[in-house]
Image (cartoon, rainbow, N blue to C red; front, side, top):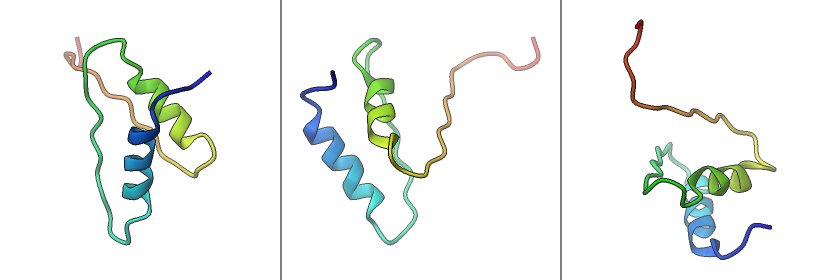
Length: 59
C-alpha cells in the first residue's frame, strides 16, 4: 500500500499541469521510496521514465 506521500504527489501534479515544459529531479537518501513515488504517480499517465545511475560508460 502507498501512503503518506500526498505532499510529494501534489507537487508532481502541479508540475504536470503547467503549460510550459518542466524538468523535475527527484533525489534523496537511499531506500526512502523515490522509485515507488514515481511509479505511483505515473501509473495512469502517458509518460517517459528515465532511470540514470553513476557509472563508467564502456568499461
